[in-house]
Image (tube, rainbow, N blue to C red; front, side, top):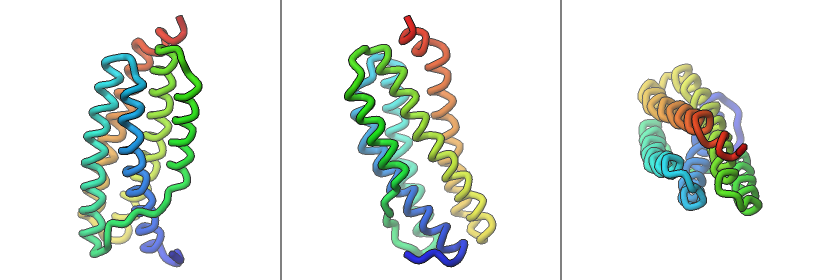
Length: 163
């Protein structure tokens, strides 16, 4: 896809994020299985459910634009998932695993927060208020997931891993 306009860039980035969300959806069950802390398992499970909804919203955004909901390879997410898989394979200590899982999940969240924030700004600039509203709902959930993970790490899991 040749990118010549902001509209082209907006569509390209939507495809990138759709691919990323689908990739995350496939990775979350493995992360959930590796987690040992019940609250972390619940947070990852909850985010898996939210990710399914994020995909539905992205499909609605594509529909509102009259475009097919097709993803395009997101090299950044491929790299984040590969990093997560490698790190999970190298850790045996359960408490260290939980701390690592939080850091890995937050790396993904921060990528998504950056992308959704940009997409919202572009949707508004391009006159796509419905798309902006749908994307804002997802951005709010991404911020919520990041905050919940920080709270888990700071209140218990980092200390447990350090002990």
